[in-house]
Image 1: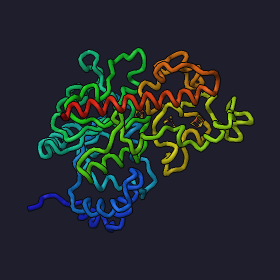
Image 2: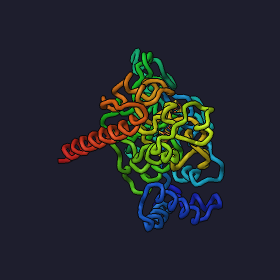
Image 3: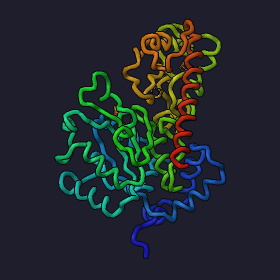
Image 4: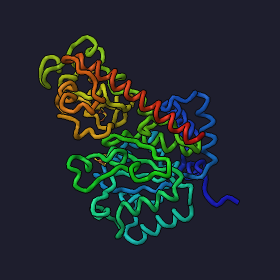
Length: 362
Ligand code: SF4
Ligand code: SF4
Ligand code: F3S
């Protein structure tokens, strides 16, 4: 006997047709570069499944990641993620607080052992044995260990959770660490960005709900579907870069003509994210389209990697770790060199991760 409402039944109860689910599946399939035929199968699979239980923990964070997922212009396709999941615990979004909220989390953990997805935003404080950041009388460190133990998968949402983020910036006073630094016995998927793109969060969860497994990941455990290309690869100003046309200040003639922002500090050549294609706020724009270079917010340590307004060449001279100590070429040509070096470094890390995974399986 089934005791939980299916996604299809839930949609019908809210007056949404299965067509909405079909549109959602088509959207998801195109986002994740799945074959067009996959969308119908996905819609049918999803309709008959119960909603995926999700427990969402917020640690050292600014709520920007949650804001990113919920700040959409209703009704949008990404809103439908809330019909696919049962968000059993989320401090910011749930109506309950205090003991009833904690009881809801415990009830979900008990009822869905080994099945729920644990989403974490914010980094984990480890200094003073985690005492810098607590909730309901427990350190975040202890809560994460408890909840991760019974989860099917763990998602580190936002650069704070994925790589330590701003709380980890030098001198890292709270001993901030990423979720993946703490959780070692469960798959941890990273969806970085400060904040992350909502479609990347929703798409990754929806993929797991539909297929019961995680999507293909890169060497930093980021879904390839959203982090497979660099900003530079897909940037609409790339033609200007290739022609050597660079804005020299934010209000010069080049800036007015929309030339490349490399010399104003754009980190697009060494940043992997989908901003240039998916954009933000219902696909309205993204930083570079608004006239500001990419800060590299989806990469580890972006806050400590030289000045945001230093060209990559200068930033890397000050911190060779940015692209792995590449030989430095002069001026803007360095952008090409750094992009190539970053790509090589990424390919090598990818190959090493694959080899390690094969070793584990073999
Ligand atoms: Fe805030 Fe950025 Fe950290 Fe998300 S990743 S919690 S938006 S600082
Ligand atoms: Fe676009 Fe930045 Fe690359 Fe220029 S350097 S093409 S602005 S990503
Ligand atoms: Fe972040 Fe760069 Fe996108 S700063 S929002 S990865 S364009």
